[in-house]
Length: 312
Length: 228
Image (cartoon, rainbow over all chains, first blue to last red):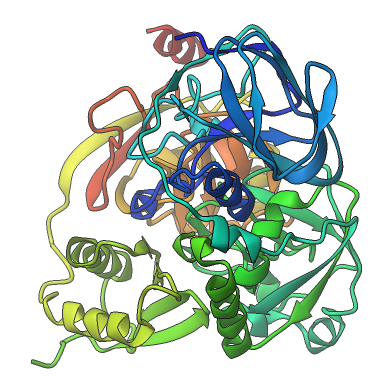
């Protein structure tokens, strides 16, 4: 049962699936893979249910010993994957024999990678998901990040589907250190001053080091908000961009709070929402405003060419 | 049947619908809490968040039809005929220590209100609150109404981190941060009790419409309760 033995933990490695659904009304966040498109692709390449648990590595991945033979596949941030010291490619299913050492290196582009196995990772189920939510210490492995010396168990996976056609048409996100994120106007967009509205697409933002799965804090020329930027507590979702009175936007991630009181000035369009999980401190970012109609069409087009994401 | 409470539904993104009341005449949070319960019962694949004066629904724009969902929401509001209950449900007492070590913003609260420390504590703990909403993080409760005398806006620059159990105030609300994390409210004290416990069969201790009372405790009482 002790199938995976961690020799090193990486910076922040957790077990994630596609998140905890239908408890948001009770304050329970979605959680799940911060880049759900990459985790879905990792599972699809393995022929598994796209909601199967994966290992999410942040910045620097873990090193572990396999005590069972497994096929593995890595998708997401560009991190070197090595099996017994030999470099192997991303997005390619490779067999790792029992006893082999698997190592996920430092990300050169992007922030998080997803590793899927032949068998299913066993995690602690809470309200129908094994996603780790660190603030409440729930899901995953004892509700915490993986530590050196930890073991993870696997169970046989019975689900098998051939996604080959879907995968061949999939488009890999273009990782860079300078991102253009498409957004639509949020419900409180009109609280922005006229000059801030004019500048919002030209502002250059830097991703702050105080960013995590709950929110990506951005630093740039401060936006001006009317009415002291205070409002009645309102629903928030992953991709909501709120703006406190200091004028520095916060882009909410998978662990987004369900309610908040800072104006929701923008919403990241679904077409670019998975990229939130790939932003890392120091990256540059600009916004591009699009209409609701365009946002809907872009996502529908993408779902036609890459059908597995229609369930995300 | 025509709903007694006409609503408007606004598309706020390609996958989010916001529901608001046309008129501001009833107890919003409870209306939207009830509506959220109706929606979750009738629809299997929607994320629903009731807020203070709105409710937002997240749907899947590829697999679900936006217009059908809107129709369903209009229909469901018709079944809400008593948006306000007069009597609050069971009462719960939450111990709070207001010592400086825990009340991270006490100095600022004193400056802002012009009250003494004892007056501020008195305004906060000698009153019955109604649980207006739950949300933000699992187990966070929004309580009202906060005394006018200690009303403060949210922090200009939210803190990336406050400890578990911190009690915050903002505008006409006070609330309890059940887990450590970021916080935009002024912190006035801390409770040693666990408001969200994943080991319990029902992890959610407190629900909307309950009554909540804060009771001041000393630091040694706080520490004793933490150990229990």
